[in-house]
Length: 144
Image (cartoon, rainbow, N blue to C red; front, side, top):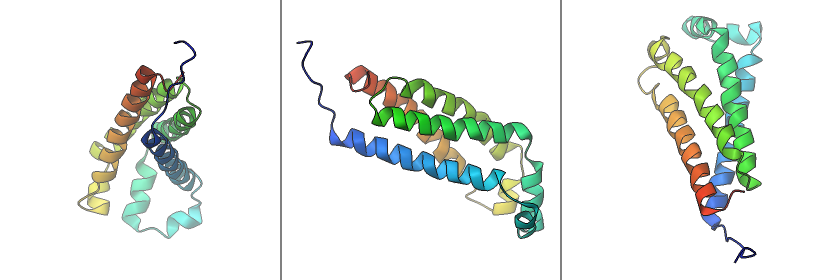
């Protein structure tokens, strides 16, 4: 019985690959945000410039933990490792305050209009899902 191999369903791999792609988009967004030059900032509207300059340093640090924790967790899923779960937990713990800041303590809605809440809410939901998914994978014996 101990040598019995656990078969991982194909949809697990689809979710793991989607997770990696999602988090790579997050890393790309993070890089674009933190590497924005003064010249690039000047191409934005005045309202966008003010919004960008209003973000406290801790939000950039949280953003880094969120996206790089997500990448590490996604790689863990692809490697079938249990450490994917703590990486996703770290990511989620960084996502939540960052998105709360963005949703409730900035004027992002006034700058970008209705629907601004959609992406932060999706990010939180997907972060929660990845913690759940890694827990599910551990319970099923897919992650060791």
